[in-house]
Image 1 (cartoon, rainbow, N blue to C red):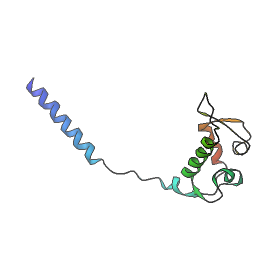
Image 2: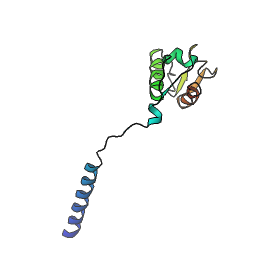
Image 3: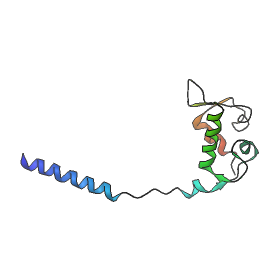
Image 4: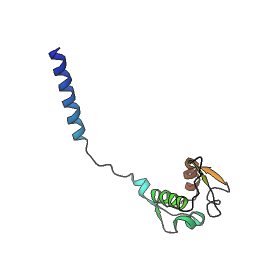
Length: 108
């Protein structure tokens, strides 16, 4: 019994040492951070200057939250207002995952 408890103790030491060595900070992918130019329909929401895709998504969500466009019952659905309808291809409601696909069509 004593040997098995020593092996278990040794195994825990190795695992904790491995966690300490993997303390590198993740860097962002350059493709996400490259500025993209939104067209006029998206620029009405996020602004006309070239910004990274991540920032486009952040600003879009800020607009959605500010105007209360997220569906009350199903939070995954976004209800488009007059400004977002052209961005969403004329659809009145879109899924949050479909939203990024539709917005990417307007970025160049």
